[in-house]
Amino acid sequence: MPGRSSGIPMWYANIPGLYKNRTIYAIDALGDAGLSEQNIPINNGSDQAKWINETIENLHLTKAHIIGHSFGGWLSANYASFYPQKVASLILIEPVFTFQMIKLTVVLKSIPYNMRFLPKKWRQGLLKEISGSQTIDTTDPVVKMIDIGANHYFSKLPVPKMISEQQMQKWGFPVYVAFAYNSSIHNSVKAIEVAEKNVKHLTAKLWKNATHSLPMEYSEELNNEIIQFIERIGD
Image 1 (cartoon, helix red, strand yellow):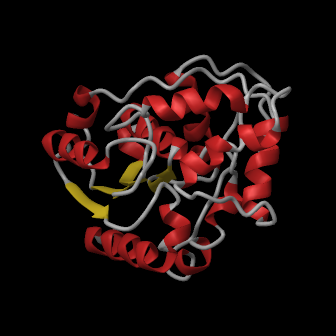
Image 2 (cartoon, one colour):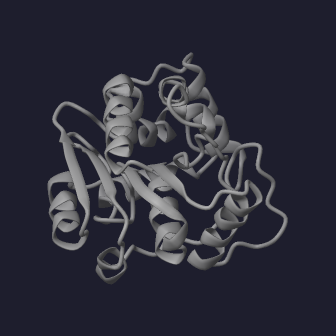
């Protein structure tokens, strides 16, 4: 599951390495920019989990290893909380609204991003904040895609409800969590502490030199960790 406004192309550096070992189903999230088409309202976390479950059932999958980054991490964790019987393992990369709330600075910088009358360079401050970079390469196809999606797709999704400790404590499947030490989104050290306190079958790693863009920054290393994690499960 991809991050907000990024769609499946955000996984461009990861999918080639992952599908050598497994069949990969990559899905543009309903209610967000991408090729998936939403035709009924999504009102809450139950609705968010339901469309993912319908997708998995229509693919005739008994179980799946669920992978998500950022908002896609929350989607994955939320789905796993509603349909644990369908989850072979849960792999969360820099998930939001899961182990820590989003930092206030990110929330504040998201306000001008949605004010179309402000200069574009002001609004791009949010992209810099999220990516953890002082500069944005506006010629990069993924950056352009995220910027266009955020500026021209108007989502009506509900604000995600924080995954509760009670939900985490009920997860009976293996969980891999990757956090970036230099994440601008949340306090990654505290996030791992929450995960270690509440998740039974946890593998957690703090990536020392990474930002919220971890899947793109360390694609090969992250792919190897994911593959090894799944192979250890033996499913």
